[in-house]
Image (cartoon, rainbow, N blue to C red; front, side):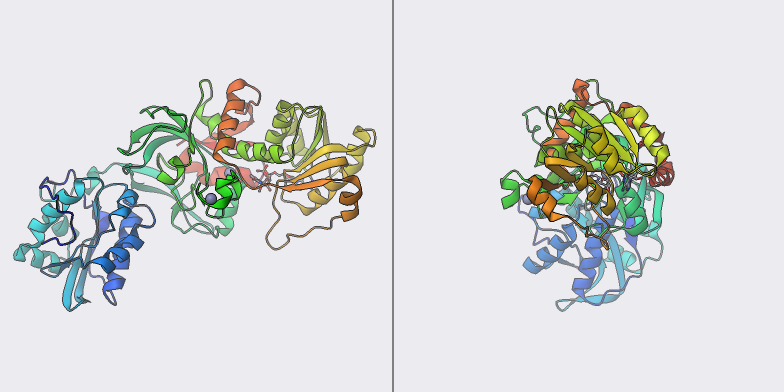
Length: 518
Ligand SMILES: NC(=O)c1ccc[n+]([C@@H]2O[C@H](COP(=O)([O-])OP(=O)(O)OC[C@H]3O[C@@H](n4cnc5c(N)ncnc54)[C@H](O)[C@@H]3O)[C@@H](O)[C@H]2O)c1
Ligand SMILES: [Zn+2]
Ligand SMILES: [Zn+2]
């Protein structure tokens, strides 16, 4: 009966309950077969049973072969290649009382299927037994009560949806709308790793997403991209880490957030940070404001899951991702022994830059900040050679005075401010380097740059965009060696249900690093 199944069909029943209450949709409408297929794919993605992309594979599969099964039932599923996108075995149930034309047949029930590994065949054969029985097919077609559906399709367990473990998550729905919710706990697909999230730090990006959303986020989406945790499940096809060490249950790990494709011309040159195909944890993949997180294949294949070194806590490891961006910047601006450096902006990023510049051998490191309160808090932690309040004195003059009129070798703008960028350029010594670390608002991206200053003084202006997997490894190594401590920069630790409070603290600049411990 199942024309599109592999021939090596074995009859083993599905394990556990694959149809949960939230997957049953009664009295639906579809314009045509493709509309029904789209709804089917969206349902599986919404359940979190499959990674994004599986819905498209359902359409592709239908183009190859019809998934009409007889008795008014279609069983849409992805292509063989899409099997890697399956996170756990699951069924959907869509009832179309008015019927949907399916190449001349009429479909009343669409049962989309996601099956991991060899469970595929077992699930289908168990389903077929129920569906090809005319009485139960008719009962399913006319069911008006979800329990009837669950009872027929999960005969051994009845309405046992509650048996799937649940977890708490913080999910972004729309600007201003982040909800703390209960969600099914995900399971790892064959090429994925599941972690118990122990720490997920917040940053300005979370504030931006909360207020304005993000062009690369397709809501609803679990937020959080500065993640550390512990491995609890390893997919059957997952190989060892990049250094050859096999993953073990219980390993402490940190994940990259910006995920390069690893295959484009830029990635092949080692320029992972500007990969045009970049995807991100918390954008295209679920994020770390959750009790559990699936590390997708896309992260593992670029060696983006890192073992946390001995002596480094989960809280500290969660700061490795923003710290990695600072490492990228100071590499590009070539901060090195003997350099005088100024960091403009005393938020968490500015603090990391001050400490990193020292670790790289800078001679003197200055910190400039507009807010007196923030300057005092951050300077007390990272102890710059001078802390300059840009609201009280002219910061350019203050830097020139501190350097006997010479200026600094490197200026890093750790603030989303055009004024900071313009000031920074005027603080530079001859041959100085300016790192434009903080981006500017989309509607105000231009500054006035005295190009003669760049010309005659042989200045260098460098951009910086995120970090590579290797920068994340370096960040963890700096912490492990004690060269760049970050523990004391974590000023707030909050439980998952206080994500909105955490975002508020970040937005008001009341802390340095604010970490969620789910
Ligand atoms: N390039 C990258 O890879 C990358 C990565 C992470 C963050 N960032 C950017 O780095 C910047 C800093 O991040 P953060 O989390 O520390 O931000 P933050 O908002 O917590 O801190 C920025 C600080 O800069 C101060 N400031 C603003 N204008 C100033 C000026 N003209 N002179 C002196 N101080 C000024 C603010 O008062 C604030 O305290 C942000 O713009 C962020 O988007 C860039
Ligand atoms: Zn961040
Ligand atoms: Zn790439």
